[in-house]
Length: 167
Image 1 (cartoon, rainbow, N blue to C red):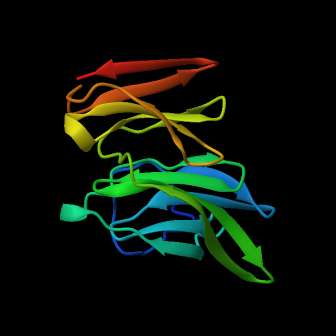
Image 2 (tube, helix red, strand yellow):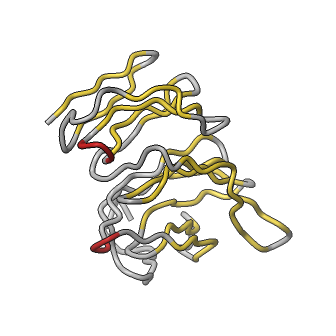
C-alpha cells in the first residue's frame, strides 16, 4: 500500500532474479511479469496469485534481464538463452504461454534490450559483446555489429532513436 507501506500481497515463488518487473494487461487482467530464479512468471497485479510460469534457467541462476512487453507478446533472453518471443494466452480460466519465435543468433546477459519501431535492439553476450537488431514480428536477425564491443551496454529507446552506451 503506497499510503501505509503495508504489504498487500507477496508471491512466494522460487527466488529472486535481477531483472525488473513489468506491468502487463493481458486478456483484460493486469499482471506483473518478471524473472524469478528458475522461471519467468506472470502474477495477478491485484492479488499476487500465480497466473502462469515458464521454466527459464541460466548458468549460475543469473536471470538478469527485464522482459520487453508489447501487448500480449513478451520478449526475453538470458545468459546462454536465445532471444525468444511468446504470447500470454488465456483459455477459459487457465493461463498459458505459446512460443511465437526463437532466435538463437543473439543472447542477452546483463544488458537489457529495447523495442523501437518493430525492432529489438540490444547487446548480445555472444562474440565478446555484439550489438544487434532483431525483427520483433519474425525473430529474424536484421544486423549485428562487429564483435568484441564490450561486456555490458546501456540501451535506451527515445522515440525513434536508440542510444547504445558501452562499458
